[in-house]
Picture 1 (cartoon, rainbow, N blue to C red):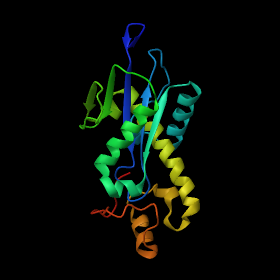
Picture 2 (picture 1 turned 180 degrees about the horizontal axis):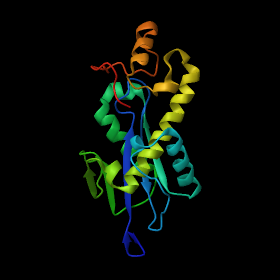
Picture 3 (picture 1 turned 120 degrees about the vertical axis):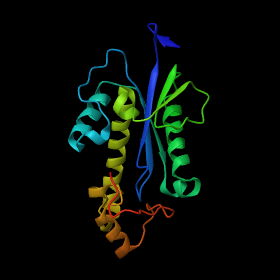
Picture 4 (picture 1 turned 135 degrees about the horizontal axis):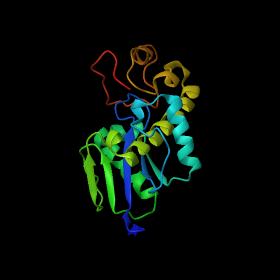
Length: 193
């Protein structure tokens, strides 16, 4: 299926893979040929304010996207790689559309019978993947802000579940909560967001 003779390409990416707490969330995005929002880039290269601005522009423009969420409990059960792939499959299937090609951020193929192109650093090299990274990051960050109100002793609003020194201190003081991944251990003093 193509639109006006152009292939329909969807980008898919996930966030939260390296966190000690919270879900892994993936987004799948299709950008129309006339798409023209400035600043779409890998979500890690953008400030929270820039991500929110672009996210709101994508939503206002009616850009089709899907989301997939896998909980910390399920991550512990199936491992983070399988959880990341599952979240991406959920994001794609939630769109209920047929695409000519799926560009997947990273080196893994998804367990789907769809034409796929795994692309390392796809969130920096492919605009639909970059848009997916922004959507997934904003949705996950908002969810972690909500969880900060439920579990204020962990500081989720600041670190979003990543293994910062402050987060690890909170774990030592309070032990894990329901959002923590029981199978995760951080080997460095402070893991990157």
